Image 1 (tube, protein in one colour):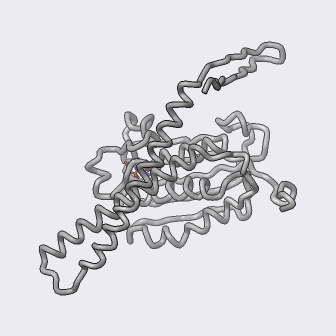
Image 2 (image 1 turned 90 degrees about the vertical axis):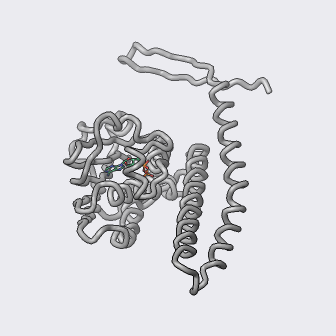
Image 3 (image 1 turned 90 degrees about the horizontal axis):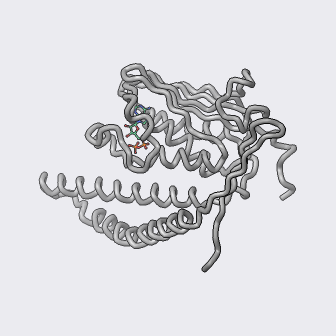
Length: 275
Ligand code: ADP
């Protein structure tokens, strides 16, 4: 149809000076929609054969299989699980990109982070040390699944990628220094900072600008063993964009990394809808 999409940006320079920019983004929107339809169809088409494959693998796991057969089955199982996870992540990414952020409501971010504590204890290596430093009952306006994906991906990344002996600190605290934020939208409202800091292997500077791109991994060989898809940080980026904030990444090779973001905090009882 002939519908056109115009993006309007207003840049405020002072009380009387501002610049209004209008950009026709119709083509961009239609390409985005083609891509989303394609990914949704791909997801539907691949999900059924994968489920069938998984069913047959379980059927074949008989006890007296010889060593070679066991090895082959193990490899098939692992790769099928990998593909299933990749599809789940792709579909989550599409879902987040197309989400409607008018659905936001008060969410107990502290509880979301603390609910991951049990999993981290199971996933970490014996030598890794994980510390949670969470201020209780800090609420934000948002969407629970997206926020959960964002924090879970950052925490699991630190466990998967920072090295076997790293010390990982997870923190969610009110920001005391009100003017020290890099995020203009939250400068005058109470806000909290979520961060995952590790003292592990770190990331070389040339990779930093690309980390949130889809499928980007630091050296596929390095990630191969950890079974990553390269979609985790893209999910984090889009989930945070839906909450009008962004992911900050600081890292130094062999020193460690810090992934953090800022979110406005709301008083739960004042903002909760009557429903
Ligand atoms: P993956 O599926 O590989 O985890 P991500 O998009 O989540 O994909 O991460 C991209 C890459 O960033 C990873 O492959 C990894 O090399 C690097 N990375 C992420 N977090 C860390 C970390 N805490 N320490 C070192 N490298 C990291």
